[in-house]
Length: 389
Ligand SMILES: Cc1ncc(COP(=O)(O)O)c(C=O)c1O
Image 1 (cartoon, protein in one colour):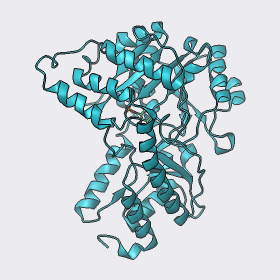
Image 2 (cartoon, protein in one colour):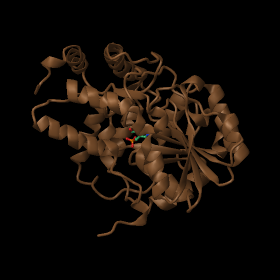
Image 3 (cartoon, helix red, strand yellow):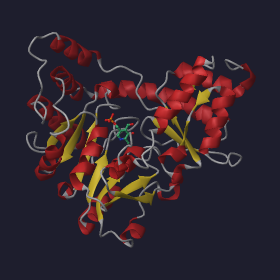
Image 4 (cartoon, helix red, strand yellow):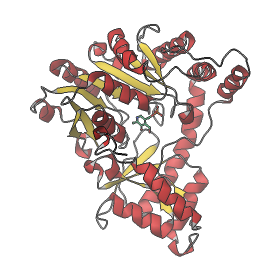
């Protein structure tokens, strides 16, 4: 069967291919330590699981749910935004719960893009922005994020480029994969840029609670609702990646527009999941602190591992990865990644999968217990002693 034109140039997701290869290596006895994917291995708060358990045994919770989510979840999101980001959101009109923020990226592209419309996407950046734009028929215009500019867009260069056809710009701070934190100055520039060029800025904000003391929302900038939609997620902040709970926040008109598309795609979210998500959003700082203490210990081990393979990195990164520059003896991050995969049975992500500006980098995930990092360090120190060799 011939696949649609829309799928041309859309490959299988890198991790889906690589995990198959790793599976094959494991079947051959290699016992690969996977430090690639950013899926939290820690559980949600026990009270969150309790809500799911208590609610899911009730007989009357199994029906389809409304397209805009239940009021108590939207209220919880509104209070969460006020408490942590100091942003006021009307729970009835300015919030749309999502089945994870990844689907929101696609909904936004399908809502706003026609053939030929252009979208600014970060390089390096989350690969889903690029595929969603292409699937929706739009054209990606990459903007480079460079270490020397603190991985911020070069606004001067962007302002001098042709922007007439650009409708959307994807941004994401704390940035994945570089771990760069936002500053107020950067956020102000983004809002000014969106307003000046009539571009809808899509801020994807799933990492603001991980290894970061001051979560920030782009919506906290004055007048931001005129040109910003913000995606957020419980996947990383609340260890609920598999639960699929995210949210889209912004002006009522934008939320209504996206809902026109989304309501034709799914039929709401399981009620007990929504109630448990509302519980998660009410957690206090001590819970986030506990999670971050674990990530801090792991990150120290990752720093040790990266020093062993002579990579350079900033110790001030946020999010659940460490981004590091490779030593010059490797052609690129793929070369280094293959080297440690085949010699040391450790998988780390080549930075090039996030765009060619990431070619000289690798990304190590913090989503593994500290012992795994210790074992990975041992395998790198003593390559002759790794399983299956
Ligand atoms: C930058 C970024 N945005 C969005 C997502 C997707 O998150 P969710 O689980 O909410 O779909 C990820 C997941 O890895 C991500 O890294």
